[in-house]
Length: 116
Length: 114
Image (cartoon, rainbow over all chains, first blue to last red; front, side, top):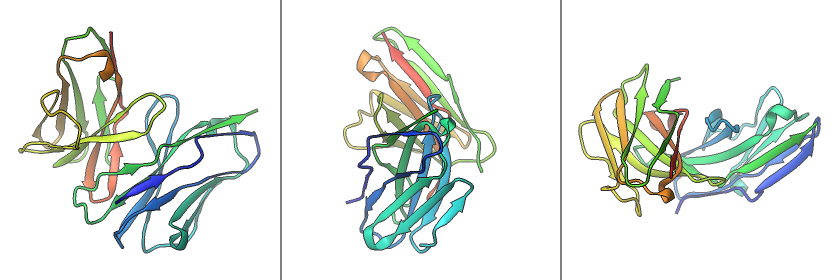
């Protein structure tokens, strides 16, 4: 069965601290996709990254970086030098290629609060 | 990427009334759209997959007679919450499945049933 676990329900940091949001997934597929979305208070989902199962290269985009480790079925997200504007709920999601419709399975989300 | 709009962005209605939510794909012809529901402080749960020109596929536990989905054109899918009750109050988000494993989400519709 497919499943996404975000064990951290809430995290609070002070501005400029680094923070890592954990994501562990379960799937029987060999081909799958992992996503991270940001949901600010307005509610709209903001796409951050998509990674396919064959690409384990870590990615960096500005202050954001992602660590994909198939050996531990994890896809962790790190924000460096956090800012107040990073405060939001972050969702990790999984999509399996065999599910031709491509719907996403979301984790429960991690609420990040960055205090000035 | 694709642009998806939803209307209305928020709606308040009385218990027992029906509410229609529109999801439009503005720059792509979407044969497949997805409807998710998000209760306060919870995750997004897939409700149904909307297929253009055919019946929607509902997830287990979602009442198809209560949540009517119509996908009559390649750019529009509608979700109608029939005989809404306070427990239907939620944030409803649609997404457009442009291709496998790439989805673009609408801004969501916040429904409050009094």
